[in-house]
Amino acid sequence: MNKIKGLFLALTSALFISGILVTNTLAAGPHEGVACLGCHSVHFAVDDKAFAVKNTTMINPINGESLDGLVAAKCLGCHETQELGGAGIRPIHLHTTHPIGIIPNPRVADVPDNLLKEGKLDCISCHEPHPSNPNFMYLRVDTGSYGENLQKFCVTCHSAKADMKLIGVESVDSLELFSAMDQQAGAKNFRRDEVVTNNPSVEYIKPLGVIPANDILPNYLKKPAWVNEPEFNPLVQ
Image (cartoon, rainbow, N blue to C red; front, side, top):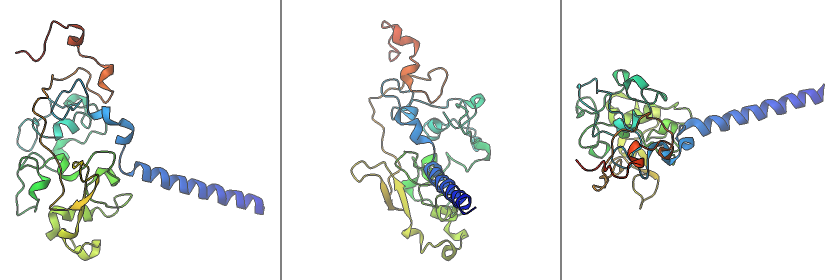
């Protein structure tokens, strides 16, 4: 009986520890498995920053404008339904999502300029999607392995609405936000007013347009037709 009880306890402990390890491994998100070529294409970019995916169908429901120029257009190349221009991978639906592509109202949110892209809210205002980010769902702020202290992230911009003592934040100036966008500084936490969220695009990269069957497969598996037609130059108007 003692042997059986001991075996049961050992098995239970092993499963519990495995569960913790798996949960923590997936806590940040699944981009580790997608790797670099899931989002970027070295030779067949469809948008700036050598992006391999772009949503050219979805319209921003808050203002009726195109997502062009926003990082969101790249994110929704995967994270929107296929009917709305994405790849159907964990679609988020903009009409039920925190607004993006707008200039924030200072009476609603205190958003540092460095968290905005060209003065507007974007996906990267809240998320740092690179695999070096260890935070839950690639949020810029560490909210715990399961996101159990999500309020700590929300106070980055909405501090007047939160009980700062309850969530263990002395002030917004004490918050640390993760970024991997400064190669010289490295991937790490920065002060709220010092974090870098985006860098200017290299001007010489000229996107070639949408490649059919937009998905997260490496683009070398989906060569556009003109690759086999050397006399056709897609960059010539």
